[in-house]
Image 1 (cartoon, rainbow, N blue to C red):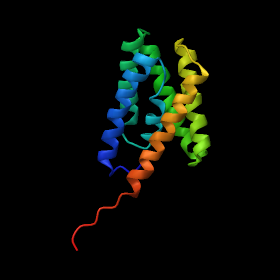
Image 2 (image 1 turned 180 degrees about the horizontal axis):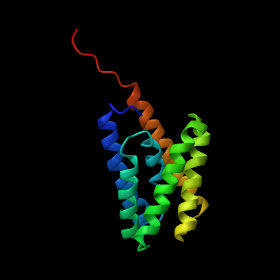
Image 3 (image 1 turned 180 degrees about the vertical axis):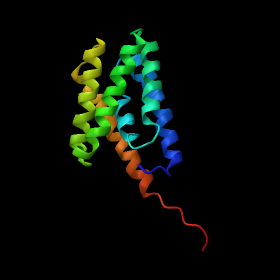
Image 4 (image 1 turned 30 degrees about the vertical axis):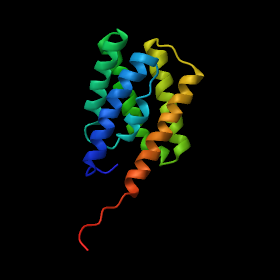
Length: 142
């Protein structure tokens, strides 16, 4: 995502925070990883993941240091793996599912196949939304 798309970036940041509250707070599912992947090229992604880790720690009552460390290491892994993935949607989805399962296993959260399905659906919806936003063209003047 280009850095000049600030409206889209702000929308994704807010959506990610809502996904932490709705996903981990209500459904106990990591629905925020597709949002983190969508923001991986943004300059503030690591500060954002740090903030999400603090929120997640508060929602799950897991030690703050452990949650933040896991979240930041997975975000760094995703950042480094973006060149290898190369824009293939299936590889991106696999990377997000790996981040989700690692988070659940390391932090001792429950996980299920249903969670993977919802994370995949969230990934599809976010990708679709981004493709739609990139197709909108505004013409000024005559």
